[in-house]
Length: 240
Ligand SMILES: [Zn+2]
Image (cartoon, rainbow, N blue to C red; front, top):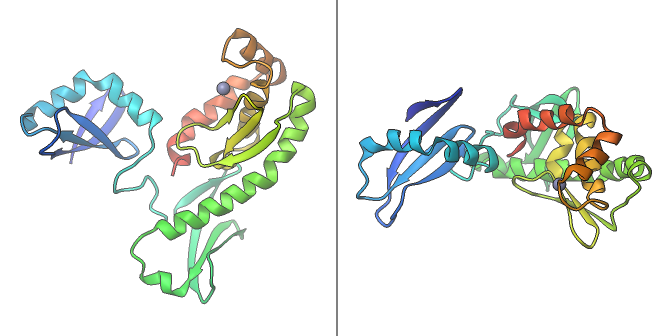
């Protein structure tokens, strides 16, 4: 593992030679941690200057892609903090004779109860899956209320509402009027989540992201930039 500083970002990287590669590539391992994949003809000592040369592109990848490699951005360990509606809750993992995983918010903790035999499972994937199911349920319960609150103000409604597991986008609005929200937005405080709701509802009227689109949002949410900023600032912690 080596560290390189690009601007004010510190990136931890490892280098791996891949026999069949023709070009240098990167694999995102965790937040600001990458694996540089190099072809056999590429000198290890060239990696640092390659990273400096491609800094703009590398930073963009780190911002737009979620970790795909071995180490997840979250470890799903006891006490690890998870966002829910703008508050951080520590994870409390327990194993009990239950048939399916249960997730519950209580006593300022996010409780995950797993079937006893999962204790021997070395992977944290069952915890991640249980959490995703729970967050998606919360999103499915709460987003219709926000649409009811903002629909009359925007003057538009979705024809269909979907909760999706997008890796990088927070929401989408398709031509048939279906609005999909990433379940991950339920991690955000209401003031930030409402920005995504208004953004997608406004797409029912203005399709692109032109001046008319932004003016329409600004008229409803004067501090839209501040609301977006919350997502920009916390994105790495929300994408798991
Ligand atoms: Zn948009």
